[in-house]
Image 1 (cartoon, rainbow, N blue to C red):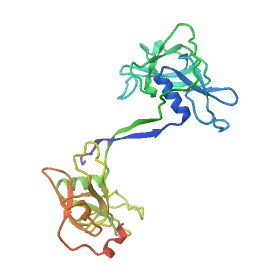
Image 2 (cartoon, one colour):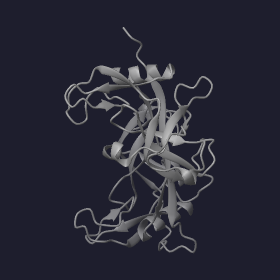
Image 3 (cartoon, rainbow, N blue to C red):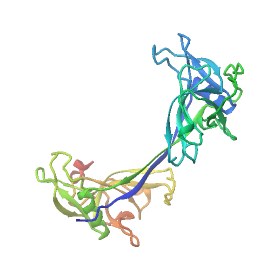
Image 4 (cartoon, rainbow, N blue to C red):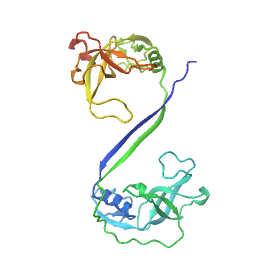
Length: 313
């Protein structure tokens, strides 16, 4: 049986968003150790606050402070905390209805073990030592057997409100290619590019996916393509990517390798970025023991005629 290939992959990017008046007040309040909800037309207080009534869809902006103490409505024990979670020791995820609120807030509850957590238990907010205006300003909830805390009566008006946040998004997963892509990757280690031909339309797809995207039938016939190809279209990259040691600006292009009926992606080098053009003939450049081309460079051949690659745009 052939080796099953797999590799850990990470997709990560910062998501920047502006805040409306309700979310701005809520996050600014957390920075100041104040929890704000919003009151609906029928008198319910929603925490966390929303900008529109989930029942009537009416806009709501009537801010009201609630207490930092509350009651657990339901919970689940987290035996193995993951990277980026509120606590690095086992804890409970809990829905907590703060005193004065009609809805529950999801956050971590710090407790010795699951036997110490139960629905109906009283808890209070443990504030983070350093607060910036984010949900993480609540470090977690903790058990509490004291008197019900009272709101300070804050109006929700702040001199220096939070107007925007940057929320990191990250997905860690293990990728395992199928038969077709495994063959493609193995060929790359020999500095060859292999696609697969559709038995119906006879088109050659690179990289192969194991099935024709047009006809929907399985592909099995391997076809070596390239190594040279034609730039069909391109873009100029002006923003430097994190952890990518390439000076900007540079060009990233769709390249139709000779013999292929689908263009693949590749960086263009060996030529000023403003001289890259559609129809430019290029060839791969391999570096060291790399398993894939570092970039593509001009071959010096005359540009390809538009009619030869127009169907690959």
